[in-house]
Amino acid sequence: MSIELFKLEKTQNRVWFDFGTSRRLLPYFHFGSEFFIEYDRDISIVPDSILVIPFLTNILPIAWVLDAEIILPEIDEDFYKSIPEIKRGYEEMYPMISFRGKVTPRRITRNTKKSEGRPVAFFSGGVDAHNTLIRHLQEKPVMVTIWGSDVFFNDREGWLNVSEHATMTASAFGLDVVKVKSNFRSFLNEGLLSTIVTSSGDGWWRGFQHGIGIIGHAAPITWIYDSPSVYIASSRSSKDIIQGLTCASHPSIDGKVRFAGTQVIHDSFEMSRQDKIECIVSFTKKTHKNIQLHVCWESSGGKNCNTCEKCLRTILGIISAGANPDDFGLHYNAQNMILIKNKLHKKTKNLYYFILIGNYIEIWNSFNANNIILQYPELQWFKDFEFEKIANTITKRKTLLIHPWKRLFRM
Image: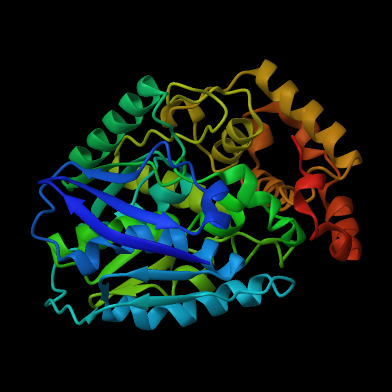
């Protein structure tokens, strides 16, 4: 079986990929929509061997899992050499799956640049992205925001809000922001691909495409800006109470990606989500900068709903760090806290929250250390919640929780 890239076509700011596959691979792609990427600046000077990288980063896991050959005209030498290391990261993460396949370029091109420019940092507007931005602010990173990752093309209002948020953030910090439109998720049959990796206990997006699929979009930008590095914010942490949970965005995978002298860095893996919130709160207190977080993945329109688990967890995290959620684009009220109280009491009994419970324990520790109960006496229930007992239970039952995570955490 094979996936062959016949050619890539580019205009001043758009590149699309003319490719075909063996008949057996056809169902895994939505060929009604070709794979394309649009940048909001001129990419015509970027070599084809660099422009092809976003295509490859989204195709490689498919080729590995289905034992297919990727045939293409040209590839960057650094990226080509990094492929075995990236693959090894997947193999270590999913030993129950055979990763085969191969990449056959007609030409391997050595691209060199000084790499003396500014780094690139992906920016989605959430806690992870803001923390990474703050930690590397002195490097003046070029922010990159993608339409088609968490916000899809049918949510134009959502993209407008996300786009304006990125522009506002870049302006506040004196940074450049590159906006990208890509159908890198929708050109694949994500549902069908998930069925071939069920033994992993994970789905295609979270377990296989997320991470390098996003990272590849930065390759042309690093060429334009002569970037030495790319930062992608960690979503999990080495501090997580349960280790061994899978996610394709991981230091063992992201950190192996290289192209044209640029190194990818999986940033802040050593920090818990609460550590990141406290870093953001501390930064705003010192600098008086206004930071608006976008954390919600359940609402359309690019806004926080303030009622989903993630919004409520972030609200608690900000309060526990000694700040007002309303200053960060979220809204606290007693009714919403009753929602999260009920969720926690219900979900922990059914083991649903065992993965997320580590986040709540970090928040709870911060809540008690900062004596937040004095300001929020109505959160006595949170102070009294038996997180230590739950943590001990988790420690004893770790092996029951790691696989499959989707069954345990269906919200």
